[in-house]
Image (cartoon, rainbow, N blue to C red; front, side, top):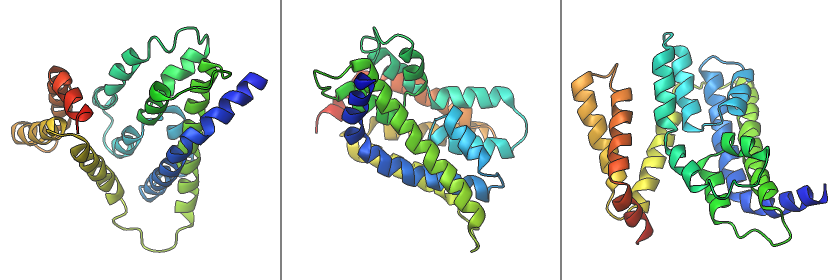
Length: 233
C-alpha cells in the first residue's frame, strides 16, 4: 500500500497540466453530448470505456447517424492508429508490470504517453505503479469532466444552438498546435491535401475513411522526416 501511495504522490504533480486541459475539454464534451440529445450517462460511460478524446466527439456524430458498424470500426481504428507507434515505444517500459499492463495498454493516450515516456521517476517509486497512477489520474480527469459537463448541460437554460461547433473548434486548435510544433509542416500538409483530394474524389458523404487511410499511409512513409521536423526547432 505504501508503494502505491508513493507512486500516486509522485505522479499527481506531473498530471496537473492534464487536469486543467482534460477538465475543460471533457466538460465541453459532456455539454456537447447533452446538446446533441444524450443524457449524462452517455458521456460518462463513453469516456470511461472509449477514453479516446477526439474519437468520442466523432462517436457522438456516429450515434446520430445511420447504423454502420463497419464504417464505425474503421473510423475508430484509423483515428486511434497513432497509438500503435506509442505502444511500440513503450514495450520495454511495460516489461515486468504484471497485470497492470492490461490497464496501461487500455489507458494509453497522448498525454499519458508523454509523461510516462519522459518522466524522471524517483528511485524509491515503483515504475509500474507510477505509470499506472498517471494513466488512472488522467482517465479520472476525463471521466469526471465529461460527466459533470453532461449533468451541467441538462441544467443550462439559455439557447445552446450552435454549441456543436465545439468539435470543429477543437480540431482547429489541434491543427494549429501541430502546425506551430513542426518546422516543415509535413503532417499538416498531408492532412489538408489528403482531405481535399478525397473530398473531390469520394464526395462529402464518403470521404472520411479514405482520408484517414491516406493520412496514415503518408505519415508512415514520412515518419523519419516528421520526427526530425518536430525535434529540431
